[in-house]
Length: 332
Image 1 (cartoon, rainbow, N blue to C red):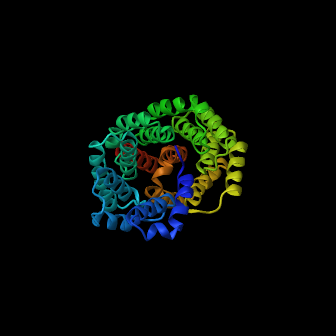
Image 2: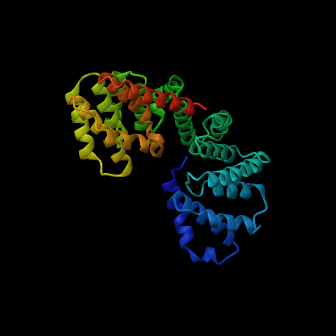
Image 3: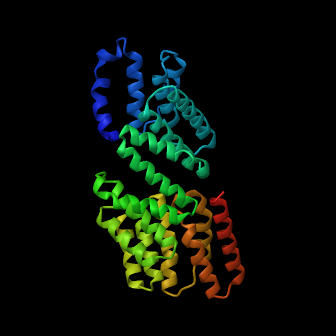
């Protein structure tokens, strides 16, 4: 039920007290240090591996914690690292099965799901959700249970099963009175706005995007929704205003620069000017580096419509082929 920040706050005084480090609790302090570093997003993979290799901990409970921590101790997109982490998490799950620990078992299952999500192994990850949520429910880990549902909705969306994703998020939206996590409530509206946008429900997308902003969302993609939805509703003034607010609000990190390139194309289209071919090519080449933005879902139809409008049917067909390939790849 606690946040990483509050847990780290409680652990730090123990780590700062040298009498624990130089005592029979040495190995337990090392384990606490690993947890603390993980909460602060500090890579602790090697130190946890050393603890496992020390063979000090023999009971299944501590071994489950160690292998679980080893499996999540660094965020990596590297396929080899993800495989090593998944094997560690599966080992942790094996130890959990031998014990009556609903909370730990639910947590390990949640981490397995996240590992597969990072690896974009979406189909198999769905098989773990029911068991994971069942154990989290039994343990009373309501906060973690909410995050599990958020991730399940996002995975269905990654598979472009937007109707299923919408049902999950609307269910969460209807239970907002039970949710006091400040970062969760805006996320629900963020996701519903995007799911509505890619399905062409532009008024609904605008409504959720505005609600998300009102709830304090600082997610740059919201302005992508606002600009593109208003463009399709032919409210060009509102679209331009959203683009202006986007540029005034965010610094130029990589994601913001990526999104801004599409907004430049959108402005050109509203001004009835030709779209710069080098910018289109650069944006298309960057798509694999920003998979989580899912810009493909609006960029491909946008470019197809543009090329058709100027009777460039060769490029229109090429973009449509890319869109079909993207949809097929995402659903495998």
